[in-house]
Length: 276
Image (cartoon, rainbow, N blue to C red; front, side, top):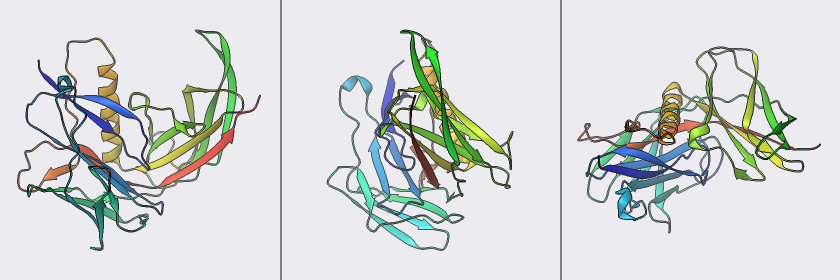
C-alpha cells in the first residue's frame, strides 16, 4: 500500500527540536499539518504550518507560507501572528502569555482562501514540581552505573487533571514521541504522587531539567494516540497504523482531514544536577 509520511514536531510549551516520522495512510491528497500551542510563558508564541509529502519523494516536508494566522480568546481578544523569515513559521506579533482558566481558539486562512479553525482550548493550571530526586542502578549493554530521576508533586483538588512531562539532559530534550510521559489524576486525585523517568539515564554532573505541562482530556488523548502510533511504527508488522487527526478543521469542508493539534497549556519546570 502506498503511504504518505509527515514530519510532525510536537510543539508543547516550546519547540522541542525532536522530529518523528508518523505514518499517514495514503492518500495522494495533500493535507495541512498544524503544530502549535499557547502557553502561560511570556514570549512569542509559535504556530507552524506545513503540508504532507510523499515519503519516497525525498523532499522535505513542504512548509505552508503566506497564511493569515491569529488566536482568539474566550473574551474575543484577538492575537495576530506574522510569518518569520523561516517559511511556514508564524510568531505572535507581541510577547504573549496565556492566562489560566481562559480558552483560546486558532484561526488560519491560507493564501488559496481556505479557512480553518480549532476547537476552543482551555488553559488549565499546572501544580509546581516540588522536588526531583535521583537514584543509581546498574544497566546492561554495557554494564555501567546510571542515575534515574523521579519528580514529586501534589495533584490539585479538582478532578480531571492531565499532564505531560519532558526530560532534558544538559539542555537537550531526551524523550521522544514513542516514550511520552503522560498521566491522568484518576488514581491519585488530590494526593501527592511521583513520576519516575525510568528510561532516561543520567551521569554524574549532568543537569536534569523536568518540564511539566497541564493538558485537557482532549489533548491528553491526542498525545496518547501519537504515542501508540509511534510504537506501532517501531514494530515489524504488516498492519498500517491509523491516521491521527487533530482538532483543526476546514470551516467550509469539515470532511477534510487536517493533521496536528493546537492546545493551551501551563508550564512548570525544575532542574537538578546529578551527583554521586
